[in-house]
Length: 290
Image (cartoon, rainbow, N blue to C red):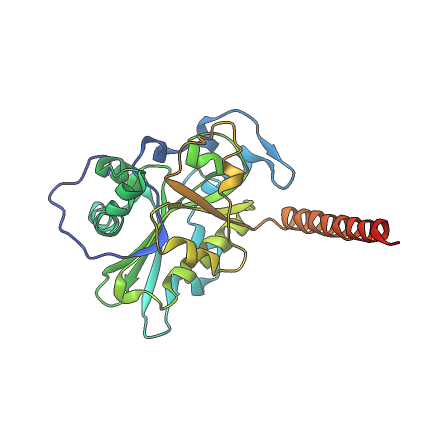
């Protein structure tokens, strides 16, 4: 039973790959069950009916949880380079082995508890456990091929951009809660491999964005994400949502758009704006001429 708070967990030395999600009550999110329990019809120009989009991404035709790695190249189930020999596993939170869940929680506690508290986002052990093992949660586990030790994990949900406010707003996205890698496995491409895998999964599921929540106290998250092509600080956009709390500065949201129609529209808008600025400059120059 994964629903209980773990007890007598041994401490595991962990590391932060940059993304984090705190222990406040909003961490329960709208989550993946939105596709099953919400009847409200939401739509976006890129994805049509959002509920159907999420349901197809989350469930097989027989109603079982979809293994997102099954839809991706087989090579993404392993990482063998830079001296690494890792296997990558997909799990749903409700079926995650209790011992593995304890390891993930201990890694998170070791590296992120202080960061959560300093940022004001708050650390709640019971809430974090529920976040990892809920029916809404999806995870990638990174294991040593020999010995099977967990050396990192990614925790995420297929949901809407309003996940950070616990609301049904925004476009369909893959929302990253945590991306954690043990210190001895950092700077070897594990974090980038995880993001690439999640990005490909989001594209395959026809979602619009991959999002990641980073606490305001994170020293690793912003530079890590900003260095990867396509990622940007998207906090201003989520602060415009109806459910947003403008006084909450404990976190920021980074995002990468993976929807080609949205990207094309943005490029067209940028071209129009650039042309408008060029015309304005020419008119200003003409007006200033004697």
